[in-house]
Image (cartoon, rainbow, N blue to C red; front, side, top):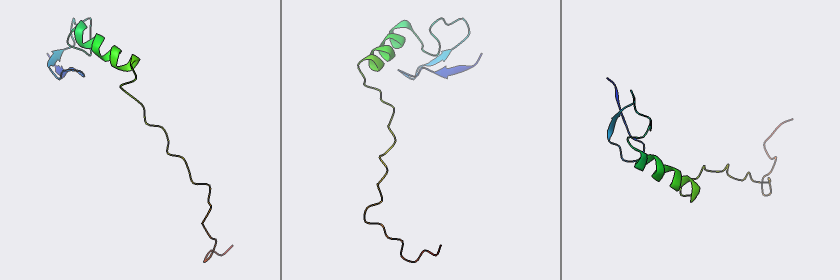
Length: 62
């Protein structure tokens, strides 16, 4: 039997026969869903690229 840590509480959990996998329980599954819906988790956005002002083409040969 392979145990994996629950993403919420890090408790080692078997995935075999676990209806809440990858979580250890319905409680951890609900906590994770609540964190997503309250926007506690965020995917980092791509940093804004500079528009090139202040850059020079000095030293470049074309």
